[in-house]
Image (tube, rainbow, N blue to C red; front, side, top):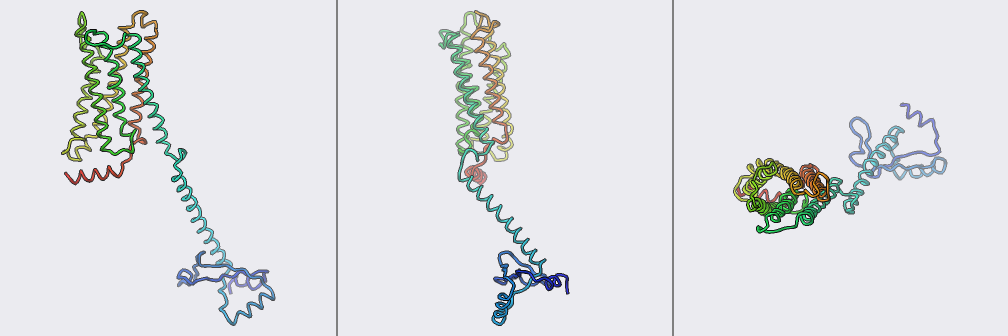
Amino acid sequence: MSKDSDIEQAAVPASETKVEPVAATPEEQLTSSGTTTATPASTVISVTNGGGAAGGGEKAAAGTEKPPQQMTAVQVAAVAATATVAAEQVQPATTIGGIELAASKGGTKSNMDPALINFKVLYVLTQLCGLTMIVLVGTWIGQHFGGLGGSSNPKLEFNWHPLLMTIGFIYLYGNSILVYRGFRTTRKKTLKLTHAGIHMAAFVLTVIALKTVFDSHNLNSPPIPNLYSLHSWLGLSSVIIFGLQYVAGFVAFLAPGLRENYKIAMMPLHIYFGLFGFVLAIASAVMGITEKAIFAITSPPYSTLPTAGVLANVIGVLYVVFGALVVYLATEPSYRRKPMPEDTALLSSNAGNE
């Protein structure tokens, strides 16, 4: 006789613990090794008081129903431990699932992706910086350089150059880069057309700005030499890169017929040279506004930091800040636009047509 059986016979407890199976399941049957497997869902532990009344009741019921199966203290402890583990496994998962479901249905800002919140804040800051930059350039040339004019007044015609370059070659250029991330819920085909449209508007304004600066040099008396400064060299280089980028992007990603593997191969080059041309445009703009301040702000001179000089410096700082924000938003991996079902369907249809 085992040690557990001796303990049960020697002790007369005030209550006796019995385990009554509600329904016999394969898991509760004896295995070949002689052990009993029980699950918390199919086992009921009942407690009956010992004593004469209980004993008499058990004797009266002995003739009509099968006596309950006895389990040792070790087996009872094992069943209780199994029930506890099962409850711990089920309850937290259900609770966590309920919390997640409520959070997804709530849609509050506290449950939003932190990266998306940061992107929205920086994107709004970028737009404010760009718009402020345009307003200050307009104020600068309006209050300190006589405003805008036509070819009959070359000096006033030149003022179109910094204004149109700021609008087209900096602000619109930067926004065309960010269009894929700023409008992340829009279909990719629509974003492609928008990207190309903004680029085209920027290119038209840039061409007009270049014409005004060449006219102001050639129509001046005496004429001013063209393309002698570092600003003109870098500025014209960035315009050429911009134009080549536009043609290559249109052929690769908008015009039909190019195979998908060529598009995939060209994408890194398109992204790199797009950002490189934008950074080059920012650098040439900073040099251009400095050059204009040195040549045009003479009374009082630029070295004394008059109001026109301070405003020129602020505009240059805004150029740099705007460029830095655009490059950061365009290159940060966590701000990437996630593919939408429409994009996958469009890619599959294009692959089928090749």
